[in-house]
Length: 355
Image 1: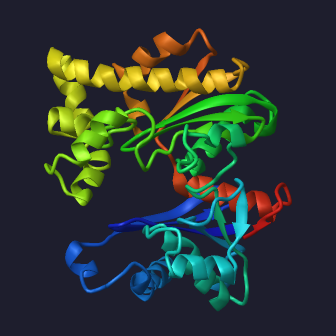
Image 2: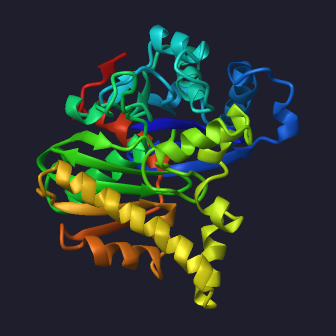
């Protein structure tokens, strides 16, 4: 089986070709601010990025008709169950109009569908977009009917590593319970119960631990006071929550590699802020373990920060290992996760859902 993976980001388009679940070609195409400045919205970039994909295939000697499937990164859609989805016209329309929000990943499904159509109707898929919502209804209550907790998290990587770890133990994802902590620029911590993420923090919009650049859950009354203080505009408050919060607000940087080096040099002030982030991650892991009634087979630490075996991983593991053994799966290979999702459908191990 040959699968083309398309993973659009705000300043890049990542492409990969897989054969029988083995990567054979990959390329990250960077897009400068100048290149993108002429496009008034994300959808208007479609043809520009499509031409770059076709150039990549031509450069590597592939025709679209040689592929068994094309899979794109899922974008901001209506809340969905986890799994692999056929890209249909309704999905493309919602993404084109940005009905649920505008994000570069919206182009993944659009490009996959258009390129698949060029290749005589081979299937186009997305898998586990950030809007996967499998939360129990009781987990969505906030304390007031005007507000509802939303499920927006690193679904693709969380579910991919959970499947991988389950396989390592000779079981299926649907047979085990996990608490998965994806730790990067955003941090999401999910309670995985027999194949469903029954509770998770909204990693995008101010819920959960603070992160290298996000504030996480803030004290409400203090936030309300700040909003009416006249000190910040609405857009500045939003930036304070996402982009200028967390470690960057405390330390002036979101570069955790640099912070880790400073810790090795004995910087106690930076250590306190870094420990503070880890402490909040620990508490959220505990919350999700409680949501699973303590019936946790494994705790999985993943994402870019899970490469930190000097400080973050041991600090967290020390505090949570009484709940369950800790597995560390650093990074997050989105292209592989997408290819495996398409492969499961092609092999008949999973039935693709309809949007």
